[in-house]
Image (cartoon, helix red, strand yellow):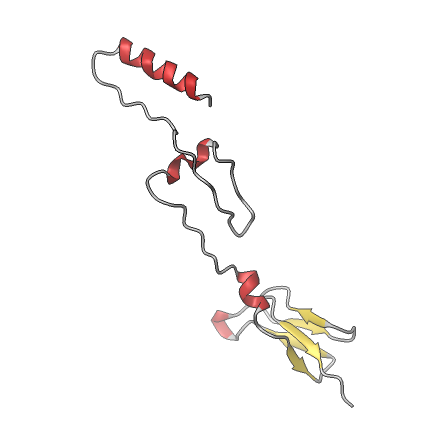
Length: 119
């Protein structure tokens, strides 16, 4: 919304009412930081007003980066399964075919598996 329009509206409200009116405007430009989904707003976007009193909290430890730090698990079988850590901490069991070269990741948790080449 245009700042001059806000100021005009506030001025009219103050003149019409006998009680004091508190009108807030977004005067400080806030630099937005990206979230894990890539969401980032322009510095004059009205949605940033909620971060004027406290900074926006974004966790820098994105899951995709944390999973990428774990090296692929070398296995000798053609087909492996992943359950994400067994039991209630994990996910449904997924079978992964390792016939093609390269590493293959689990669709649920992203853990990678690679077939060990025997010499």
